[in-house]
Length: 183
Ligand SMILES: Cc1cc2nc3c(=O)[nH]c(=O)nc-3n(C[C@H](O)[C@H](O)[C@H](O)COP(=O)(O)O)c2cc1C
Image (cartoon, rainbow, N blue to C red):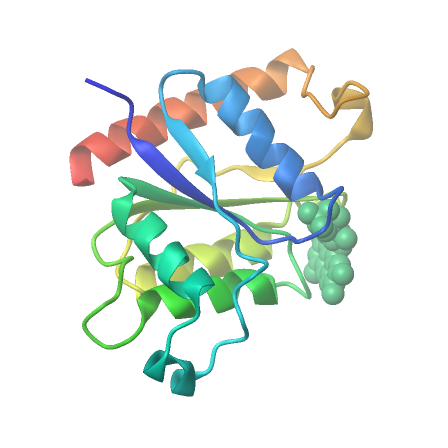
């Protein structure tokens, strides 16, 4: 049986985003346990109900990608103790129109990275709540609150610190089990 496909929403649009780097490291560490697919969310217009009259191609593509995935993983920066606007925008698009919520029933998990010591805790918790609101079955324990340390990465952004790799690996196993259980 092939590994579950996980649609990954990275809440930062920055080229050198530490959250995108975390997503790439999680994908690397997961190996063949999960198939992580980082989705493009930067080309989604700001949510506007009027656009459903002639939906933009980016919106249709995004909704189809979520619908086709077995699970969802949100990896977000903490912006002012919450999730980022691009992430909220993407989740709003996926949840509408009424009756066409592609998140409904999907196993999901949230994490996030910050250079700060608190590991984006408030942003991650707010994201987990949001995913629950749109009908996902959210794994909240164990949690990953990632305080990004440049010295734990090589010059290409690859995570090299064994303790962190091992912790993330255990979290990936927990999410794979969660997907099997609730998916
Ligand atoms: C608008 C804004 C608000 C922020 N608020 C927080 C915050 O509440 N907590 C935190 O730890 N970092 C905060 N930061 C710092 C971000 O964690 C930091 O810029 C991080 O690198 C952003 O993630 P990225 O590298 O994936 O873009 C904020 C940054 C911005 C731009």
